Length: 624
Image (cartoon, rainbow, N blue to C red; front, side, top):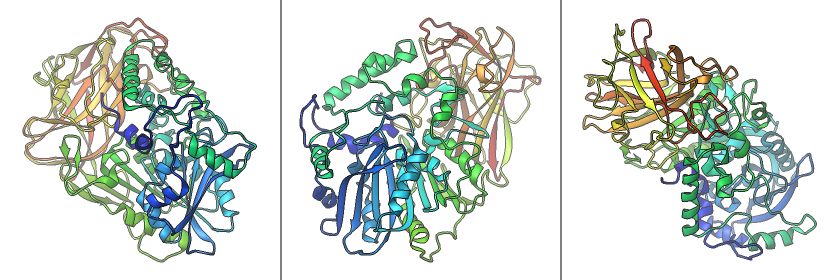
């Protein structure tokens, strides 16, 4: 399996600089000198870079920080703050940062606690609120700061901004958070714990991140050395695991095998990864109180920092970002932009943008121009038209156009029910499964066998490469139910949250439902749009696990899908239902803890559709 796109995006800067094996005590010149960093940024002789500044936090832990300042600015200047768990030089590769420096901004890049050469132990979103607040307080005390700070970044460097924004530091004047969904905890209609869960099912793609990053304990530099010595040591040693491509490939292969082995709680232990938060996360339920200790933004927070939230339809956590905007949208100066791309690749869109195997047309957008105007307005008090904009801008895939809306959900979108139909044989794409707006009469239930030792593979999706792929092979499995509309005579604009309501029974006390929304093209290619899960023990609430009685029918609402897609004439709307998804932890279907079990039970799962048990999906249809 290819590296997940979000993992590649997050680790790309590191992979480009890692070229050799790091043995204990082996000195390697892996990081560029200050002059080299400025030269790569195009700022040689135009800026100064001060490195390994140890900024103290309120509990005494010091965080490794770098500052770039333009050489031609003498007085106080606005500041852009980036906080990251990765190589600071990699963060500085973003070309917009050099542009900001040339426009008179200072750039502060800081490693969060427990990463690179920052002190302390690493835990997910480590004190993102307190450490972020203390760092801004430090910035405004510096003689080169004008007292106004903006925060910026994509993925991890966006996630830190969410909890920090809820602190409402008076100097935190603006933020640009791109792909920030992993910092979203629980809101009305959202309980993903940063994307670790979908419907209470752990997402094993997190293993891929913790395999290389996120170790709780790391080597540290001595505390009693000068800043000059710290810089020399930082140039000479790497705190990151550095492997040759061959060794990295072998570790990945071992990890993929470990995912197939049981129990799931030992996935990383089996490949000898040091202690990480994943070790407890995989054993936690969605209602575990330990989740409250993570610096997520969550229900009850009221950030007032002007914000641009930017995400993508094929981002694994875009559902959370859109729901966060829905929660905050009445706050002044909060805006949402959603692109048709993968995680953190929205700025890479071209005149002919390909997302995996799917063309989404000319998806370009002047993000950099918008970001520059945004910070100029809030940090330099420049009068421009940046606030003269719609609250919501989204790309309508299929029609391949940008659309604007005043709010979310889209005003005027009509919730349209499409009911499931079949004669009891909806298995595979060759079966009799259908979708229509006609209420089902007396119809036979569809059934499939869910074998945890033979999980349904997933091609495409926000955590895979390619992101979009033809689902034809998956749809030929007998343990996948396929329901499709007739060929559309008129196009249908589906923009919003898609939900499923299914009447389900099982021969086991617990099981999973995997739901996928698919756009079927006239040539038969079936491109995935979004997918979600539900662990059926949580059908009554994540804090109310309730098991099933064999043969008894239960109502289950499956949520977590959001999209904006135009199903054109000649296309079909399709859903797939299965009992597993290879991106997610398998349900062993015993009713036990799951994470510590090794002996699964095979389940026969039925989806019922009749007048009394009208299984259906809800589509938000805009216009006709």
